[in-house]
Structures are given as structure tokens and as C-alpha cells.
Length: 105
Image (cartoon, rainbow, N blue to C red; front, side):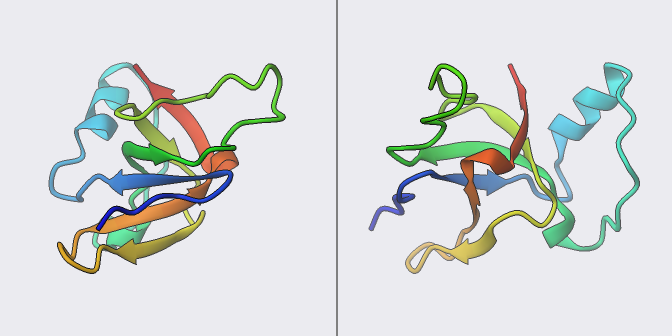
């Protein structure tokens, strides 16, 4: 069973709290990240973009996607909602395209 985001939505596999390499990389680059309660998985704000809906980022600027599948991204802390794959039980965040706030390439 595939999870396919509809319309302008995107599917992100959140980083785990134990292995949030993207946050470490940004800190090494000199970015200051706001302190969050790291004991709560729903506070994770970074992950990997897994799937992009057909109309994601259409109507913005030139219509070019801000991020591509496989990119490491940051997203709005309480954007979208958490879903669980019915077979694998893996957790994902289903977000609006505009909830992607930073792409790291």
C-alpha cells in the first residue's frame, strides 16, 4: 500500500529524536535552533521529503518545486498531522506544501 499525498500536500518522514543529523549539521554551520522539548517526537521539525502531491507549489512564483523527493527539509512545528502507515506502522507527517520552510541540499 502506497501513501500518496493529494493535491498540494507533501509527505515527510520525520527525523527521529535520537538521530537528528540535520539539526546537528545546521548547528555546525552556525545556525541557532530554538530550544524545544526534545522528549516529544511531535516537536521534531525536520525530515526527508518522501512524496509530493501533483499540485504542490503550483501557483507560487514560477511554479517550480521548492523541494524534491529525497531532500532534507524543515517544516512548521505544528504543520499538518502525523499519520501511521497501516502496514509498516512507520510514522509520517502529511503537510501542506507551504509548511516546508527550509531545504538543505
